[in-house]
Structure formats: structure tokens, C-alpha cells
Length: 452
Image (cartoon, rainbow, N blue to C red; front, side, top):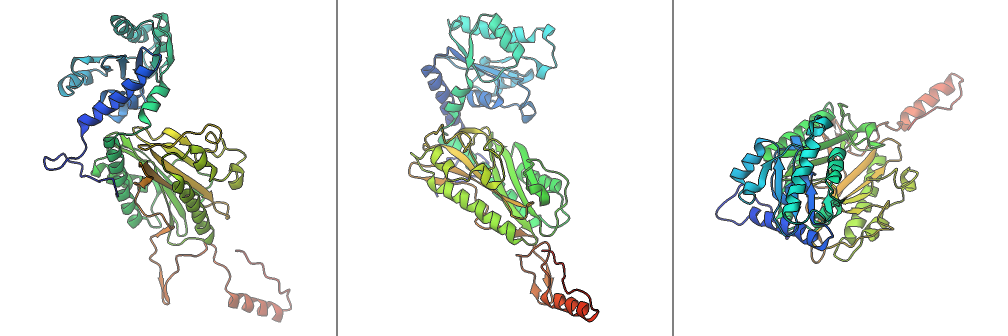
């Protein structure tokens, strides 16, 4: 057990997360990538990239609005343009930015029409900074951009190139403090699953489970519950990737994916359960799902490739899909950090022909899925893994070696009901014999239709 789990407070008597070091080391990785590239500067609108470079955050309400942007010139420090008064807040409270934090509003999510001139204003701001540093003739890397801003930059004579890969490559190897934060984020989901497991019972709705998990996470210090995919019963196959108000019933399969962030660092963390009891078909599916996951985990070490890991997973046609694109994300590995999807990506769709080497400091999730023979239930499991210099460490600790049964409280005069049962109970041989004898006495055919 190499990774530590700290409390969420800062203390004077123990070295915990070093946020100054976190800021310095993240920015250094991007500067190193920029220095090796053809780019004169990097312009980022993606909120995770902005946070990685500037160590600023204005709330997850802005996550999808492209409302803030940062320019990192070669051999210089980042400049941040932020949403109204947030820029002043950074000047006062973020000494690593100071006066390089400035107000700047782009297109307000498209709500500001082109004639208002916001795209041109952004482009002029960028051109002025590049010209001051003699970088205006060098390519400008951009991670993502709204079309009017892209066109305005081009009208300013700026050559725009893809900067997204530079950021993805900078973020693939995690620093010591990033790994600590990812571990602590997973710890919070451990607790959420424990609370969920002890609460689940028939009559509980999927959306109630989402509310319960969200409360546990926010109480523990989560800054953002991105999603809780709660999937139960016949909704398990095919996987819809969205919760509903379906009510849990005895014998139901149910699986969850909990995605949240602590200090920006995400989780992607599946677990499967049965409510009250599990069918043999679900138990078999869970074992198959676990076996594929364990086979992949066993390979994780420096020097292994994404091709080797993806190769142990089944072809799409083996579990009911026509091709790998149709089955994408059901057998998947993906980096995890400030976003839930980062490098490396591990999938039969891309990894067999485009492998990447596994390196120390990578943190990724491995997730598997298997449909049951009954045609409607399924199992889903996921583990988050830190690649160490000698192997790996799993940071998702809620037990998943075997299928867990929640709410198993049914007791008969002969003792507890078994937790392995069928939803449709097979016929009692004595009852079948009695029916057959009765039919024979009445002179009717002895054939009896039996389901299950």
C-alpha cells in the first residue's frame, strides 16, 4: 500500500497535498511540451485545461460554456481572461497569477450574436499579446474553439493549429499530488457505495440512489458530482448510460457508475449488485465480467502496451454487437485526471492497431461489461489503477471480487431465503406430480407446460 489517504483539511503537523508544487509541476509539463512543439503559444478554452495551466476555478456551472480562456506564450507565464469579477478575485487571491488575470468575455455560449463583436475582441486580445512577444507569425495551438473566434483569429493573420494533443500529452503522466488527489476522490466514492449498499431495497428508485450518493459525496467535500449512472432491472441490457425513476424490485440486477471530482480530480467507478437475491444467469455474467477485468489488471505494469490489455477482452460479436464501434466503452480503459476521459485509451476499437506504452505515473480506469444469458440483466465493474514503477496499485476499494446482494432480509420458518434464486421460481416436483395425477384421474393428457 504505497498511496496515502489524507483528511481533506490542511494541517501544520503533517505534509499532505502540496498545492504550490501541484501548480508548478503541472505548468512545467505544459511549458516543456510547448517548447518541443512548433507552436509559439497555446490558447485554451477547455475548462480543465485552463485549470491545469492556471490553477483557477470558478465553479462547475461554467464547465460547458467556454466562458474563460488562457494564453501560454512560449518562454513566458500564462495570461488568463475570466468571467467578469472572477478576474478580480484571482488578482487578489491567486498570487501566482496577479495582474495576468484579466476580464474577458467571449461569446457567452453563443448567446452573443456575431455583430456584437465579441469574437473580434478575443482575437485582438490574443494578437496583441503575441505581437508583444514576437510570436504572431508562429502557429497558435488551440484545444477547442467556437467557430466565430476561430475565424476572427484567422482574419487577424494568426495560423491556428491543433493544441489539444499537446495538452493531452502533458496531462497523461500524473504528478505526486495529482495521484494523491485521485486517491482521495476514489475514497469518497468508497464511502458512497457503502452507504448505498446498506440502503438499497425494493421500493427505492434509481433517482433516490442518485440523491443519496450525491449527498454523501458533497458532505465529504466533493466539488462536483458529474453523474451517477443508476441502472436497474431490464434497463441493464442494453446499457442506457442514464438513470431514471425506475423502482428496484426483488431479484433485480443494478449497477452504478459514480463520477465526481475532488479538487478537480475525477472518478469513474462502476459497481454491480443484486437486490435481495441473484439469478444464476446474473452470477455467471458477473463472473465473466470480473474475469475479463482481472485479466486486464494483471497485465498493468510499465512497458506493457494498450494493445496487450485490449487483446484479452472479447470481440464485440462475442457479446451481441456487430462491431467494436457499436460496443465501444463496454470493455474500455481510459485515463482519468481533471477529466474522466484522458490518455491512454484502451479499446479494441483503436488499441490493436495504435498501441501506446504504459508508463509509471499513468492513472486509468478499466471497465468491463457482460450481458446475462437471460437477455435482460447484465454486470458492470470498474477499477481505477495507478501505474507504479514496479507494477500497479488499485485505488477503488469497495469490494467487487464477487457479486454483492443488497437488502437480503427475507426469512422463512426454515431460515433465510438463499441469495441465489431465480426470478421465476422453477416448479415444485411434488406439485407437478399432483397436477399430473389429477389430470390422469380426469382422463386428460398428462403434458404440463412449465416455464423456467
